[in-house]
Every structure is written in C-alpha cells, then in structure tokens.
Amino acid sequence: MSNGTETATEAEAQVAVRKGNHTLLEDTQGLIYGTTMCGFGIVILTHLGLVTGQTAGLAVLISYITGWSFGPVFFVVNLPFYWLGYSRMGLRFTIKTFIAVAMLSLLSKFLGTEILFAELTPWVGAILFGFVTGSGLLALFRHGASLGGIGILGLYLQDKTGFRAGWTQLTFDLCLFTVAFFVLQGGAFLWSLLGAVVVNFVIAINHRKDWYVAT
Image (cartoon, rainbow, N blue to C red; front, side):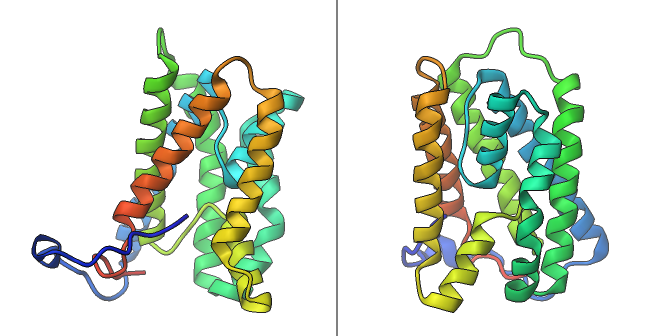
C-alpha cells in the first residue's frame, strides 16, 4: 500500500502530532476498533461475494472455493508470516499483529451472525467496505499492529534483496485477482477492484508519518 507523499500544506501543518508510545488502554481501544471495522468490512465483502487484496483476500477466496469459514482460514494463512514480522519489526509488533489477526478471525464470524443486510447494492457495498476497512487498518497501523501477511513479506524481501516491498504486494494482488477473475460471479470482479482501490486510497491519503507519530 502506498503512502501519500504530497508536501504538507499550512492546514496540514496545524494537525497535532503526538509523539511517544500509546498506553495499554489506548492500544487496546485501537486494536478493538481496528479489528471491528475490518470485521465489518469482511461481512460486507462476503455478503456481496467480493474479494480484496493481501492475505485477507486470499482467505476470502479460499473460503469461496472450499466453503470453509473465513476466520480459521485467515488465521492459518497468516501463521507463516509471524517469524518474518519478528525478524523485521520486533516482538512488540508481532504480538500486536497476532492479537489483531486472532481478533479479526473471531469477530468476522461473530459479526456475520449479528449483521444482516436486507438490500445492499454492490457498488455502494464496495465503497463502504473500502471506507470501513481503510479506517480499521489505519487504527491498527497507528497502534503498531497490522493484519500480517504479504506486507511483512514485502519488507523482509526488500531488506534481503532490495526488491521493493510495494512491488511484492502488487505482484501478489495481481496473482490473486487473476484467480478471482475466474472464480467470481458476474460483475463481482469489477466491484472487488473498486473496493480494493478505495481501501488503498484511504490509506494513501491518511497514513502519513508527518501527521501522526506513535507506536
């Protein structure tokens, strides 16, 4: 996922920048909020039969093909990446990420039984998915966590080989969406692309270190 690189305007310079570490209460709130928003996004996504990128998208695609529940698949898919996360980002990040992945795995199942849609048009759902998931990911990033997966692998390969992390993520998503093209029904592929674009747009605009500094 790319980050915004525009020069800060005068209005942007007035945004309060918080330095230092979060408290345990703040981290707890951030992880709960972030995973809940992402869980809500997964409910929208799977209700419409769409996919997204990264390991969440892989887990969704596997669940469509096999009929297995998203939560357990997502948890298992991320297991190989924790050692890379520890090696590249440290123990604190890895623990927070493990907790976030476990919470999302559980919340996606719970929210799927508690949230029902009488009617949701695909294009509106794709945009809502992008907004709520982007919001959730921002919360996790700002509290020193992630939802694991390909981003960690990308950073690891960048350190070891010089191959840019963004290219690793892009390559993975291209492969994922190529498979999805043959699996999804009707216009779901195009709506899936819309949702993925909105997620990345939200993160690109809002995830800036010069606006917010905390772990």
